[in-house]
Image (tube, rainbow, N blue to C red; front, side, top):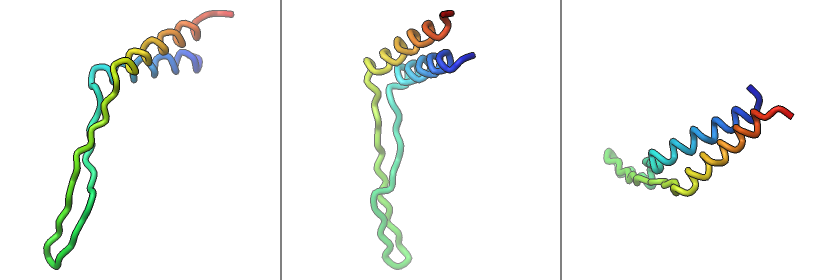
Length: 73
């Protein structure tokens, strides 16, 4: 397998993953306060959404790269 085929497959897989999951979320600590034996931690849940057009574009671009990589000059 050459680099073009691998790149095409990776783009297709990432595009499909973004399309079906719609994004991902993570939790981050924003502030911590220690008052003697007490400890206060504020956690915020952040969500990153992938636009559907971006996921579809990645799948289409991956398909084009995969086809171009499999052509013989």
